[in-house]
Length: 359
Ligand SMILES: Cc1ncc(C[n+]2csc(CCOP(=O)(O)OP(=O)(O)O)c2C)c(N)n1
Image (cartoon, rainbow, N blue to C red; front, side, top):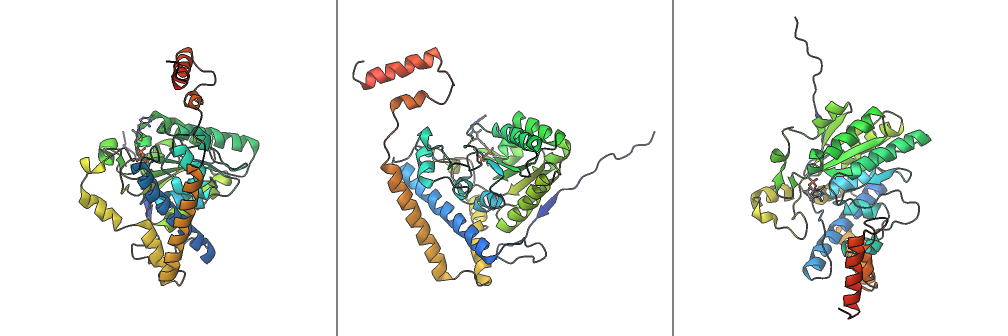
């Protein structure tokens, strides 16, 4: 009886721009100077916003926040490839994509301040709210993609999640469904290598996330997630294939979370500073800045101006957020069940009585 190889696989990694900002011209995606400048501005705005969020939380002016510093090349680069008619289905570590897709910064602040009323997008923006439950939203993305296909829309869905989410059953169900029904969904994994304190090698025996695509019958590619051009190139291609009816794809952006998991975490307790420093050297914003300077798209004065403009925008949004009326106490109990359960109703009524001084 012969032994034959039924399937063999290889996983490709795409890199377009190195740490010094040198690009491989044959792989460089088509992007005008204006678009590159816009990309840079959103990435800087995201970084400035992220740093401000930490300070606000430390000063007791904000509930919590899942920081994104170091991951701007990945999620901003991916969202930048979307068209207005595409949907984005995010997790919770994509601040730059929320801003890029049109969520008002003051509403984003309101949301992380614990007020659900901040969870609003301008009319017509095709984006679902943040998904704090890890991985559940990938199923929503598959369903959205299926609906779009049935309606004959020529658009696609981009869903973003961490590598930890690929250990959830929801990932498997969503990937399988999307592949079987050839839904126009791009599964975009920000592999930042840590799921809170669990490193990737304890999370999975697969040496890449990208290779997981093989088992579902869809293409899987890894990109340097700190190289915004590689991310943009891979996601644009995958979205276009999806819009054209070629089905779903998985893209793994190999990146790193250089900050704590959230403002409630202290990453120094479970990982080495040297590892973090190594990744700081690969900073996606500095890398893009180097490319732009080498190509006459940015100078020192321009760099300062972009930074200052971002600081101004964030300060304005913080002022609007802090002038907002706090939510009514009963809001705490809304938005979980369509019809409130009796125990929750009892808790709500007790809280309201206490606040009125009756208990
Ligand atoms: C279903 C579910 N289980 C556990 C948690 C607690 N939790 C929040 S974030 C997180 C780690 C997620 O890691 P990953 O998917 O890699 O995303 P990252 O936080 O690194 O962006 C966990 C376990 C949760 N929010 N939801």
